[in-house]
Image (cartoon, rainbow, N blue to C red; front, side, top):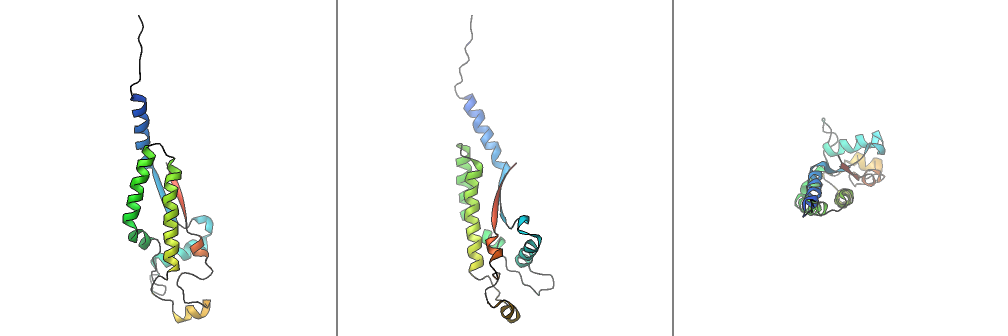
Length: 148
C-alpha cells in the first residue's frame, strides 16, 4: 500500500500567510538621518518644531507634508501591501513610497514655508527663503525602508 500526498494549495497558502505576516514588520522612515551630521540633525529638528523661546518659529516640513498628503500615502500603502502579498519585494515597493515622500518634502521646503525669515536672517544669509541657505537641509531629506 502507498500513500500519495498531493498539495492542492496548502504550500501556496502558507507562503501567502508568511507574506501577509511581513506587512506589519515593514516601515518607511522619512527625514534626515544621523549620517548627515549632528549639527544638521539639530538644525532640522529646531526648524521642524521651533525653539521654546520662540526665536526660531516652527516651520514644519516633515509633519505638515505627511498631513497634506495623508490620503495619497494611505492609498499608496494599500497598493503596496497588495503587491507585497502578491510576492513583490517589500523593500522595492516601499522604497517607491519613500521616494515620493522625499520629493514631496523637498518641494514643500522649496515653496517657502511660513513665517517669512526675520530681516536679520535675510541680511545674514542674503536670501529671504526660509529653510534654504546652502540647500544642504533639503538635499539631506532621505528615506530608509525598515524590514524587521
